[in-house]
Structure formats: C-alpha cells, structure tokens
Image 1 (tube, rainbow, N blue to C red):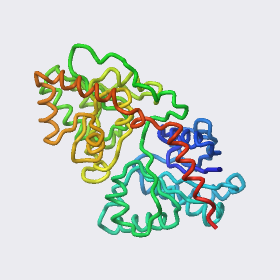
Image 2: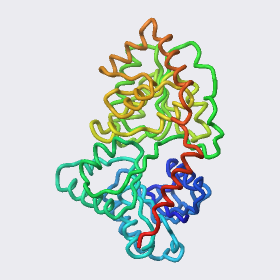
Image 3: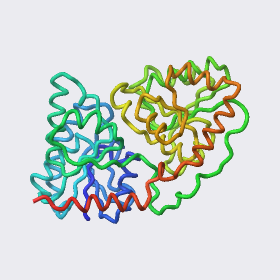
Image 4: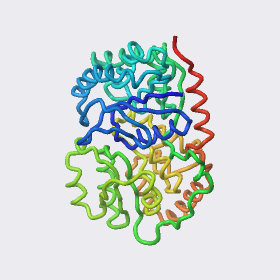
Length: 381
C-alpha cells in the first residue's frame, strides 16, 4: 500500500511517530509538508519527505498563504506522487492540499482526514467559525475515513456539526512498540526516594493556568513539592514563562527531551505526571488524551487529572491515576500534605504497574488492525 502523509510540521516528533507507525503496517510511506527549521526537511525517520515551504508557529493567516503557495509545488511533484493509494492529511490546513491531490493528481486515492486536535477557530460561533466548519465539512464529505486520537472529539465535535461524515478510526497517542519489545511488565525502577514530592510536566507546555497553579502550590508547600518541566514551551501563551520559573526555587525547566530515548529516565524521577490542561477549557483541552498519559502510564508515574474531562474519564474507566473532582489546587495540596499521602500514592503506583500494557503501547496487533482498515478503503473511482 502506497501512502502519502501530508503534515503541517515535518520535524514534529509526533509526525515521526505516526510515520513509523504507518511503516510498521508494511506500507510504503512518503511525506509532504511544511517545516519550521532553518533548512528544508527531506526525510522523517526512514520515510522520504517533500518539503512544501517554511511556516512559523501561531501564524494561522500566514499558514493559509503557504498552503495556497504549496499547490503548484505539489503539481510539480505529480510524477513522484503517482500511484498513491491513500492520502492521509494530518490536520485541516493540509487537508485542503489533500482535496487538491484527489481532484487533480491522485484521483484514485482514498483521502483520510486525521484530526489530532479540534482547533479553537472551528468552535467559534461567528463567521470565521462557520467558514472553518464549512471547509472541514467539505473535507469530511470527500474523505473515506477520519482518524481521531480521542473518542470525545467524535462525541463533542464531529457528531454535533457534521451529519455527512465518514467512519472514524481511533488511534490513541500511545508509545510506539511495533516489535512488541515493551509489551511485558513495566520497568520496575525504584520510586523516587526521600525529599519532596516531585511532579513532572512533560511535552508541549502551553497552559498558563497550569503554570500559575503549580507556582502557587509549590510556594504554599514551601519545599515539600518540586515541579520539573521538560519539553517545548509555547512561549507566546505565557506572560513570562522564564521569569516565573526563575523566581520560584521549587520549579525548574530542563529543556527538551528525546522521545522515546529519555522517557524512562524523566518519568522515573517524578512521583506524579501533570496530565491537566486548561489551555482551551470546555473545548479541545476537555476532550483530548495527551501523550503524557501513555508515556507516564507505561513508566508507572501516577497521572493527575480532572474527573470532568476525557483524560480523567479514561483513568476512571481503567481504575488508574489520581483523579480530582474538586478545585485542583486545593485537592492536590490536600493530597500532598496528607499524613497518609505516601501510602495512597504507593497504592496508585502499584495499580499503574499492574495495568495492561496495551493501554499504553501501540504494538503489532494494533498496527495490523490499522493496516487492515487502510487497505480496506479500496480505490476511489
């Protein structure tokens, strides 16, 4: 099966994981998309890539222009793209390019729309929101399949807005394990010893409300709680990310990490994983299932989540995690300061270690199922 994967950021680690997953299905995979690095990206892991232009973060209007400019570039690649059987478009902006491909170049290919987040512009009730939903509706109407990473996206967005929609395939943000090397018991590293509680906040760091809560909580507990932040901060979402951390001796930012190489080391040094996101409360943040849920889960770091959102509901369904139903700051502070907090945490950690590894890992069985679904799309005629 020949797959062309259209993406908005070629160097994104999540794009690389998805490309590796598609390769693990036995497919021939090529990518085309935009990049944000200084030089064009021509390969993603073991898959060749066609760079379509350079974009930058949080510049939606500019990115729309780049999408339009990419159309003639795709036309020049028509010989290389010939024979594509499945076109997967990772988000709405590149799905527009998928429509162009289906109309003029890869006319026999099946279009698959992958929605990893529901962008806030799609949920606006003004003319901008209506236009964006009209575009997404046109993409869905012409797609043979839609891929989502959380069932809440289907329930709260797609079912409510699009009567004419294709079947959905749920692919959660699990750790990639194509050869089932990780499928045994979770690594039995010792829990962090002595000293203060440690919370790890890893991945894409974009929630200013979370930083404010952790800032206040660490100060209130006065040395009994440390917060370790690693990953990629979205600086434009914070008033002063670096300044807040510099002013608090109990919070430290330790930069980017390698996925999956560093996962065991970073999660083994924390007691709890911060799996709370207020970035788009009541919308995308309430519906998503983040990477850190699976990464921390596999390495038995206890996730902290809200019971009112999909992450908390996922944990409750599986009998895992520290799920808070009250005010986050008050409830978590009470847990950490409680005399029996250590014993409660040990029980939560043991539950993480006993959990089915398939909750956190995407292995050969799941990849075979994905391959079956994609190959069953057939050719659009």
